[in-house]
Structures are given as C-alpha cells and as structure tokens.
Length: 177
Image (cartoon, rainbow, N blue to C red):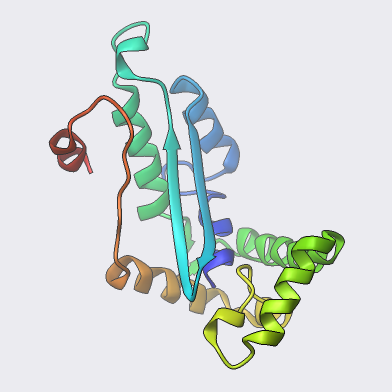
C-alpha cells in the first residue's frame, strides 16, 4: 500500500483539497517543491517526504519560507483528504489506476525490468523479491479503507528519520517540526 498511499496523499489535504491548491501554495512560497514517495531499500519500504525551498534570508519581505513550507508539507502528510474513513474515492481510484499503469510500464525499461525480474526469481522466498511499486494484482485488490489503515499505522508505528540541509540549527528545526 505504500506506493499507492504516497500517490494519493499528494493529491490533496484538508487545507489544500486539490493538487492545484497545493501547487498554488508552493508557488506562493517562492516555488517551493514538495515530494511524497515510496521506495524499497533492501527489505524495507521507505516512505519519503521532501521539501525544497529558498533560504528565508533570500525572501523579498523577510517571509518565513521554510516555516511555511513545513506547514504545507505537514498538512499534506498529517491531514490527507479523508471522507468517511476513506481517502477521497476519486483520488484513490485514479491513483490506483496510475500505479497499475506504472507497474505495467516497467517492462518498457528493459534494464530495469530485467533487474526486477532477476531479483523476483532469485529471492522468491524472501521479502526482498517484492517490486518497490508492488504488483498489479495487489494494486487491483487494494481497498480504500485498508489504505487509510495502512497510512495511520505508518504514522503511529514507523520509525522516522529527518534529514535537514540548510542554515537553521538542529534545535530550530526540531522545535519547528
């Protein structure tokens, strides 16, 4: 569910219900960039959030660009658009199909696809054999409520590592987060 959830939550949040709203907020924040993704590292599934923005001191009117970027990122991650215990159905169904299309398209990249197939065959009895995006059958069977439960479980139980590159001190970043 990791790849699917990453795709769904970046579609909208309570404060920014559409991708257009998220994009507008980022553009107004000096074209900050927000990334939400999922990838495999060994047998671990990594859920990734990233924020890239200019330094506060470069803003024209002393705006707090970093702080605003963290607010946007936090809203997308902590307040996904959930209706009646499910992600917004339109977003869930659309992103499920996008994920299926992406998995099916892997065959078009011969070197990557051969590596995926090699690992799947060599490690078939291990968790490492799983494709980073998952498989078509699992994506087709994915249920919206289970995706929300998965995401809530990630928030509650998954270890969290934060990497920051910039001018702020670790204490300032920790306090803000």
